[in-house]
Amino acid sequence: MSAVPTPRRKQRRVASAASRYTEKAIEALIYLCGLSAIAFIVAIFVFIGREGLGFLVTHLVEMLTSTDWSPTQDPPVFGIVALLAGTFWCVGLSLVFSVPVGLGAAVFLSEFAPPRLREGLKVIVELLAAIPSVVWGFVGVMIINPGLQAMGARIGLNGLNGAILLALMTLPLLVSLGEDALRAVPETYRQAAIAMGATRWEMVWRVLLPAARRGLLVAVLLGVGRCVGETMAVLMATGHSINIPKGPFDPVRTITATIAAELGETVRGDAHYQALFALGVLLFLITMAVNFVADFALRGRRTR
Amino acid sequence: MTPTPAPGGPVHASSATELSLWYGKFRALDKVSFAINAGEIVSLIGPSGCGKSTLIRCMNRMNDSPTTRTEGRLTVANYDVQSPNTDVLALRRDVGMVFQRPNPLPLSIRENVLFGLKLHARSTPRADQERLMTEAFETVGMWDDVKDKLNDDAESLSLDLRQKLCIARLLPLKPKVLLMDEPCSALDPDGIAAVEELMAELRGHYTQIVVTHNMQQARRVSDRCMFMLMGELVEFTDTDDLFLAPQDERTARYIEGRYG
Image (cartoon, rainbow over all chains, first blue to last red; front, side, top):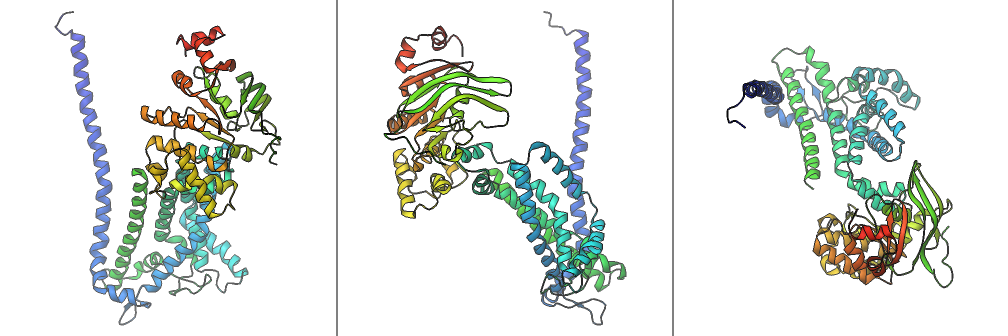
């Protein structure tokens, strides 16, 4: 009961002071890691912005009004309407396939699949996400290409081919985010509907999907963001022809494919080079906007 | 599929003969037998894990699962509940359930009450739907609270109004039996009073079977009371008798507060 601390106690206090320093150091390190993510984003934007933003501002009207992309002609023409159309055509067409299939699979996994089947299927879906983009390109050229020709397409490398690849590539994202959203719906909703005599399917259709709609929207938007930025597969599979598509079998070219294919041919600092960077800025803005919308939708759900 | 009610209406709203239920190897109900009259309020009391929730969830087949197994016979609203030929969806239409935590569907207030019709009577004319909805809200005494905001999100209501909504949404289907699994345990004293008052008003129109942890509540609301212990139905008699003159030693010790 003495007030004098025993030596042993003193020792322990010293040790805890030392561990507090390591604690601080680790905290600082983690803090730096967090900051570096922001720093990289800013750095990337500054880099492509420095090369392309000026061009984007001065040529914006020309870019957005002309369908003629002839950067090597004299004088060059930098119309990107056809490229934008190609990009959105592929993305939109891919959603037609990926949204029903992806969300359907998410519903199946979260509500209907027995637990063991669910685990197995999730592993396979995640494997799908691990396939490199260029391998999907092979699939497009070697399998979908002849398939579409057999279906009557003049050229098998076209918008539809790219859209199918994009759908396959975004499927894992849609399935796993969609399943998360559905499983986040409280069990009490399911019980309420079942106890009123709803079938499983009525419960899914009338209760679960409305309850999870924000989360599902986020899944779709992140899928769109992924599609817009996808390069290699669409470069290989869409036919690389600058063209406003009139049907699914028309070859197209996307913004990403244009940058990837042409950057090597440009002279550093010339108009063509700057135009490609301007395309990069535009792409960056589009994906950022999509991600912001997704984030917004998600936040709306959290505060509800 | 739907059984036609016996002529003259059911004598018993629900009855059981030697009903046993196993979750896997665990016996949750042990040869329970009883007969509940139409229109009365029956409360189920007993310590946690005594099987009272299991029994009430049996009555509209909410604990169907590959691992549950039952023996004996259970009849609710003229349905042979355990029979594989029973139309479970129709059973759940006629035997409504209210849960512990108010669980309105993530839809509007109006859609919550019309949900049952959407499932079971989709061809109901619009005017009839509106009338049934209004009646349901009036019966539970919340029409004035919601009539100006029927399209609002049901989750925007206060907790006790949400619970009343959960009762109201059962009514358009004209259920015979209302099962209530601790309907007041998430509510504050005012909410509890409101829901108990509502139960008293529904007496006679619906058979109400109420699981409660609160012995005072059982005394206040119920005509007859069941005391359960370890899956066994120990005593089932008039509520006043059960509390004032319990016949079984175990009942006496429970209501004295010796355990539970």
